[in-house]
Length: 382
Picture 1 (cartoon, rainbow, N blue to C red):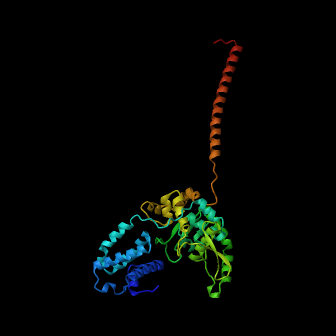
Picture 2 (tube, one colour):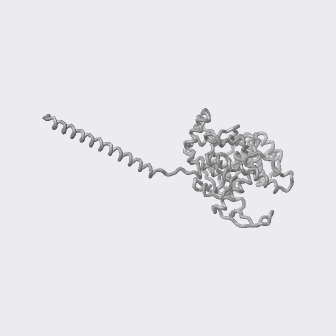
Picture 3 (tube, rainbow, N blue to C red):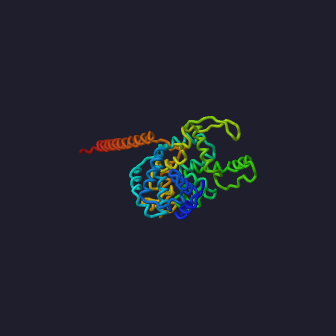
């Protein structure tokens, strides 16, 4: 995407460092001025008026609306434009258009309903996985962290043999910090995720060897020390393959342009359509099902007034709290249903108490009979 001085200066001034964020801002701003057929570099130097800019904003809004852009996407799109404009002229912050946009997009829901996964759904998907995918996605489901953070893990960041297994989140795949700017995050994973991790580490070296053999040249060979030595895109492909094997998405059989062999490809109704079941749903599963919403928010890396108290707790105390609810984010190792046995035990305990009372009464009666017998034998009259 073409870079212009005006946009780059704006991004630098706003201290926006993430490459993906810079790319999105750049794309939105360029799209806006393409609609207007005006130069970005001269727009604020050509005797503009507030009314003129307000009209331009409304014009672009109508064009994007006609294209079918959803309201939430519209809000994100115009947020980029607003920041760019305000950086060039503070007065543009008070345009009437911004209030109208806020009112129109207030409470807007996503255009597509993302899937809600429970433990049964995740089990159905991961049953078709191998050691790598099972380890990766069980760690996601039981830690609530982002996939880019799990992909950035090194073996020394994973502690599967502690009393409560945990991982040390230091950064994401393309950033030296996490999305929420945490330097490190002490997060827990389930016992089954820890076992899956250990199983994967036994196969990891062979995975890298096979990957290197397939590399077209030696300079493409991996010297990758990460737990999961792959790109974000490859992880998404793995997830998509699991969905297809589980028959949770429609797919076509197409011929690969690289190998010439037939492969499965997820069917999409329109170009660029997102999957409704994607790895981020595992993070939402964790938040919804852990059983302690404040603890979940804290361990996921969110900071709220209600989660700040957890910052003052020692890791072993946090581990104890997580352990109490770990079963809620455990996928394969299900807790047996002991309801029927518990009811039987309760009934037996009740019957046992009744028998004790009856036995005590019988003993009292026997004792009374013996006393009366002795009194009669000794000629004692009452």
